[in-house]
Image 1 (tube, rainbow, N blue to C red):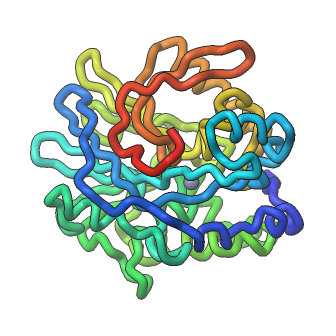
Image 2: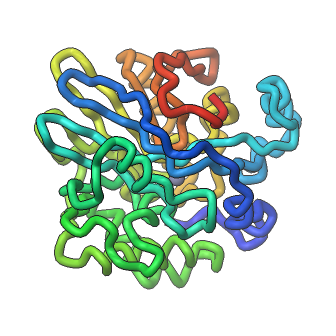
Length: 314
Ligand SMILES: [Zn+2]
């Protein structure tokens, strides 16, 4: 499963560097989404300036036109959120992903402050569900000293995901710029050794909550489907890094996709399902909660709830 990155594309995109130039909203209590008896609160870790070069097909006249029409500079960037989610029901607290932590420098690491604004301390989190092990999703599980930040928490991750990032062969084959992703994933697995639960496929995470495998971005990339009565919410990880650029063009890959062809097939499949079922959707790099509508060869976003979208392109 070759990584789509080449050293040149990574350097051209300035991977890493853009994360240092961040402006973002301060952590404030976020309005929550209700899903039956679940309360789902988006936690803003920070904003990252998405450059069109991170989605190479968007580094084009078509990409510039989309940015310009949205009132953004035609050369980018588009401010995109990095989210985690707090999910509550009946006195239980679950965390879905954990943000960047300090991995990408200042401007991030606001998830614990956002939790505190909700009156939730790290020791109240007993389980963290992980969409995948990229650093912008798991860096926040570590303190700046590299220790486990959530003392009581068990991590739940797809077996394929944990295996991939633990594979020294995969690491050796990956471009040098991917080292930070392997380092962070391995540091997290080590810091939480003995309390990492590896599951497969559509495993149940809690009553009414199940993993939904969405492979391609990474081998074990997954979303979480929350369901209570007639209400449902799908929270995906990295189906989009820019809904502005990728929703009309589902075939526009991001440079971090481990298997671009599989990522495209997965994106098309889940968009088609979400549109067909009228699913409510939220995501780690998606502002607010909305629905997906078909629009020619692409899709459009119908925002239902702007909670947690401040500062980001929406
Ligand atoms: Zn991500």
